[in-house]
Image (cartoon, rainbow, N blue to C red; front, side):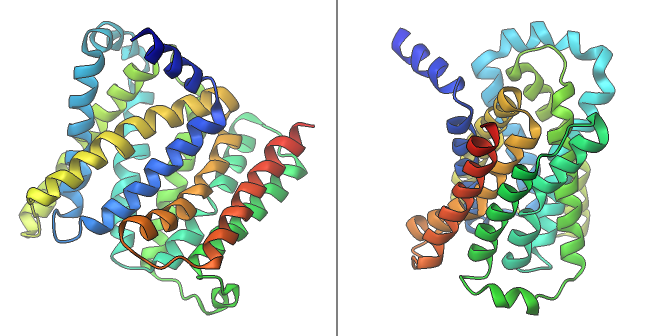
Amino acid sequence: MAGLRAAWAWFFRRPYLVLATTATMWAGNAVAGRLAVGEVSPMALTCLRWLIALAALAALAGPQIRAEAPTLLPHWRYVVLMGAFGYTAFNALFYVSAHHTTAVNMAIIQGGMPALVLLGGLAVYGTRIRAVQIVGMVVTLVGVALVATKGDLTTILAVAFNIGDVWMIGACVLYAGYTVFLRDRPSVSGLTLFAVFAAVAFVTSLPLVAYEIAAGTVQWPTPRGWLIMLFIGLFPSFLAQLFFMRGVELIGPGRAGLFVNLVPVFGAFLAVLILGEPFHLHHAAALVFVLGGIFIAERIGAR
């Protein structure tokens, strides 16, 4: 047990490893979302994922959360806004967008999220944007575009935008804002803060489920759907959010946001491994560009 705690402490002191693991779990969420089609409806999935995350939090650190949660009462507006917009609204817009636009458009738009984080940091806190950060961001965006266009960047010229893209842009703006304002997090443990955010996300997602029920479109999880839900609730919804908070705490929102561009690249690799999709040269090239962009922004920028 002592060895396990030491390994966990070692892991949590390494921001790049923490954020790369976060991106891997979020990439798994994209694959799981595709597997969930026909197994559970989108808003039911949005709601139940947070219920599963809350159950995991209660089992892991229930007494600690109950002891620390009251200290967040003076910050209730911050907690409600972060949970409602950063979790519930982001996921709802993301899933709605997927019904109206293509994966190409979603990946390209998501690739702009690090830029939104940098601009948000500049607007809210006056955080300086270095030229090398811009270069690194552009290089990672090329990697995202390679995945989205299957290696043919000229297809970007033929991309047509629709209402689904508007929803996706809104989702990215919301999560970029969440990332920026994590800098103002109250002085409580990450477990407690996330537990309260997740509780807000669960409560604010109930009206979305009620809408699905009223519209007659709700689908509760099938047996296979529950397995998918458990994965989404425990990894992308639970561990990944804790890891992302830790990454922002260690290196700041602007630098941590750059790792989001690993999500579509890792998602492509997981689709190859899990869904049996073919592996192409552009997958490898995309990974090189994204990791190269992060290297430029982090290592060269630091020097």
